[in-house]
Length: 411
Ligand SMILES: Cc1ncc(COP(=O)(O)O)c(C=O)c1O
Image (tube, rainbow, N blue to C red):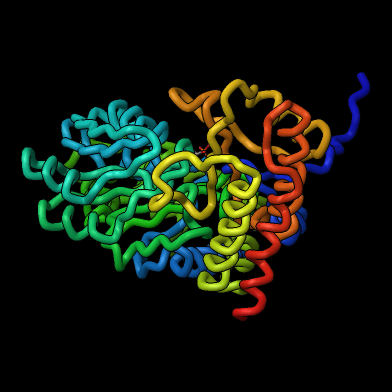
């Protein structure tokens, strides 16, 4: 049998994830494998926790990495924090809100789904109204709803949840590293993210953080597995966490000085996360968020100059995803196909009611670069014209360049 060595074509990834990994991250991944209890490796794990706290803007001790994708991170935190029979309120405004419901149903939670039209977000009062009507253990909600490009404001929600005695568990998979996620200031009880979007490493790790309240629940549900259990491992009083692999109790012990032998660590992914976080710390959150905002502004200016319209409530658009309405009679698949085949650039479609209606452009992490924005605008204009869409010729790139020139002058 003969198989070719992997040699992928170069691509510019402008989807809402995965995006391009920083080359520094890819280099770190090729480092020698260390044993997972080697002090050199556990020192890296501790550094990762420290840098992750900076990224999540939190002092939470329980801030670490789970070897799973973001969805697995959500499942880990929800399965650990929510016991069967707990009531959870889910304000849902897109596909990923339904994902929270799906996971929580499987946890045995009693869920109440608040739904909003895709392309909008909730007013905090709407969520408060629902909290008045029943007693909830938690509110679970998406910060950046990648499927619609909308970003739910969270600054008031944490305080509201606190008033009603509910935890606030947030999916910041699409926003962390590209937009503000202030875990402590916003009073988020737990926050879950991934690596393949604004953090700019490959997919495969989930970044999680949670507060003392959730730590206490986990403690009360903890059972260390037989074979590694010691006399001091007393079974908790609450229902055991139903997953072994995604067991927050045992994961906490693995990430603590105890270094409980749970799973075998995905060493190269830990190198990737460590280096991605180092890139973020070096750039600083402030500069990184400003970079995403500027590229977003230039992209929007270019798209509008072309004559395309942007989907959704612009006041609440994520700075890291932009969705454009597909012009009437245009085949979105053909646009995406030509961008990929002729220009090596990838953008995305959406799901459910928005499938075939919008195209989503990511502006995330390492992919969020001036050159990518300008190249994409030029390529998109050419592809639109080739597909018979009447867009303004030669307007998009200069409009975006004007945004960059103005920012340079201000600096
Ligand atoms: C908001 C949001 N949540 C969760 C997920 C699931 O992440 P993953 O594919 O890494 O499991 C995604 C993926 O696109 C997402 O955008």
